[in-house]
Length: 156
Image (cartoon, rainbow, N blue to C red; front, side, top):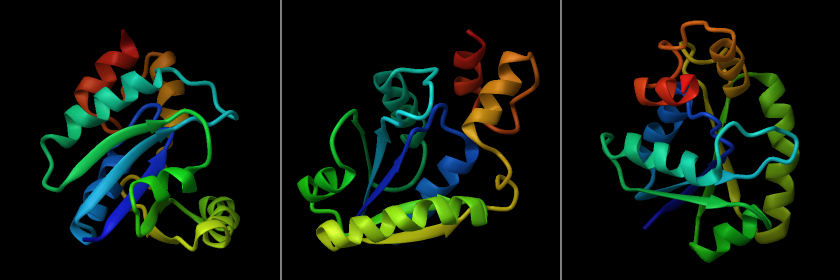
């Protein structure tokens, strides 16, 4: 059984994130979608809120998903604890790749885990969670970027 871990802050989860998760589910038997703490970002939603939103959305998608969170510690330790074969990272462009590559190399060095980079669907390639939050805070329409349930939570 091939097990993948797809980590991210997912604050909030976007259509681009969902696209990567569902594409990963076609490649692996189990996909752990893991909400990780990013100390460089200010979270709009708690880890528990993000896990609940993601789990609700993925119920409607084909695939075997486990939605979890990692609020401290190393991602590779989580990967080891679930016997993951691979990490999945979505990349929108070269900036994402340059940011993710050193982490992939260190993760490989630490526990031997491979990282698979899935390119973003061009429809979603320019959308980031930070941009979605900013547009929402300024009263803009975010319906093209996030599911309705997520948009409601951002507005509320």
